[in-house]
Length: 314
Image 1 (tube, rainbow, N blue to C red):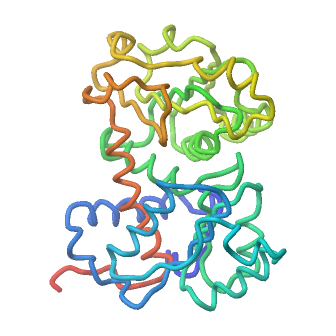
Image 2: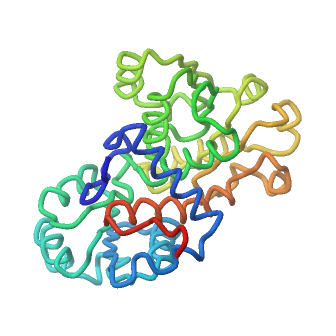
């Protein structure tokens, strides 16, 4: 069940057993980070960020540095040879001679998949357009497992931008593979989950889906509330964004009707969809969720690189 040399383009590229292996290693790293401080000594992470990123890029860099490795790459495509017209295929061919593992974020769907077809090093999709964000999904699944003790038999509500939100698309696809998960989709009509994705998941996994425009009507029945921001950068019309941007704002008052052990999750960054008065509520785990992203990326890269992760007794 080795993951050495594999690419991660879509969360479903890995079996549930392989995902569990990543989470098990991430758990060990959380409990004893120092023990893994040199397992990637001499390894280099290449970062190709054609689209702005703070958390994902810095989380990957932190993950590699915490394992003793190094990082090179770009965070702005205009500072690279892309600005001269270089193709993704040529960029990745060259970069994988410099780096041992590559993470790519790109505004066009399918770009990391294309890169993986030309790369001699493992390629990790750091987000492609409104399509997929698999390492955010791994982060989300690890967070759910650590707080709930399981990933199956849960009612999960997704709230906000379900049309363009790649974190939503990735996570609902991954959760559909776990037994007994039920989904509540909360969004304005204009930002509903794409019908093609919803119908695909219903047909393949026979999932239970409820759609509504009201957060208040369903908050009492969910185990996990996954909030998302209305993404201004995905809109072609600013008037539409302005009309929809404040559709859902979660505050302490609304949480009074939620389960005492419900989790409030968010991939961040937030704008105003979660009020600051929720930050002190123990159900708000979004900052811990961001922290877990470092460890799940550490575990993922270590396994893709095939380094020795058996640190017991060392």
